[in-house]
Image 1: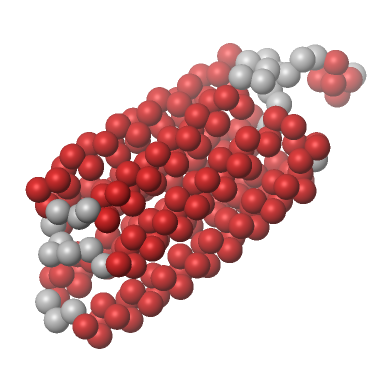
Image 2 (image 1 turned 60 degrees about the vertical axis):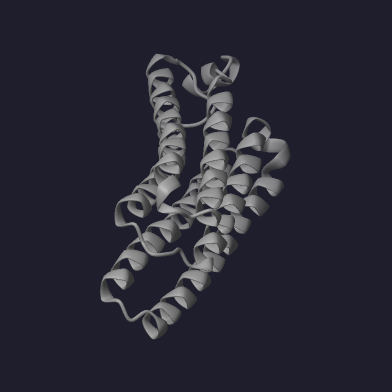
Amino acid sequence: MNSLFSALTPKEPKFFPILKEMSAVLIKASEIMIEFLQNYDHETANDYYVRIKEQEKRGDTLSNKVFDELNSTFITPFDREDINNLANRLDDVTDIINSCAKKILLYNPKQMPASAIELAMVLNKCAKTISSAVDELNILKKTSKDIKVFCLELHDLEHVADDIYEKFLIELFENEKDAIEVIKLKEIMSELEKTTDVAEHVGKIIQTIIVKYA
C-alpha cells in the first residue's frame, strides 16, 4: 500500500535546481583557483581567497537549503539520505578548495609549482563532470548510461590527480632544499589533491542512486 501511494504521489522536483546550483558553485570555485595559481602573488592572494570564500559561503547556504527542504518535503525523488549525502559531498569539495586557498594565503610559499595548476585543472574537469551528471539526475531512467560514464570519468580524473601529486612529491624532495618550504608546499598540494578524492566520492554517491532508481 505504501509503495503504491508513493508511486501515485507527485515527487518534489525542487532538489534538482539546488543541486545544479551547487555544482555551478563548485565549477566557479575551481575556476578561481586556477586563476589564483596562474597569477600567484602574495599581494593578491587575499583577493583570490575572498572570492573563493564567497563561493564556499554560497555552497554552505545551498547545502543548508537542501537540508531544510528535506525536512519539509513529504515525497522526495530519491532517498532522503542519498540527497543529503550528495549535497554534503558537493559542499565538501568547495570547502576543501576554500581550505586550500586559505593555506596558500597563510603559508605564503615563495612560488607555486606548475603541478598545482595541473591539479587545479583536473579539479575543474571534475567539477564540470559532476555538473553534467547532476544535470541528468531528474531524468535518471533515460540517462543512466550517460551518468555512469560521468562517474567513471571522475574515477579516472582522480587517478590523474594522484599521478600529478606523486610526481610533484618526487620532484619536491629531490629539488627543494628549504625544509620549511617543503612542508608548506606539501600541505597545500595535499589539500588540492584531496578535492579530487572527494569529487570521486560524489560520483560514488551518484552511482548508488543509479543502482537504486535507474
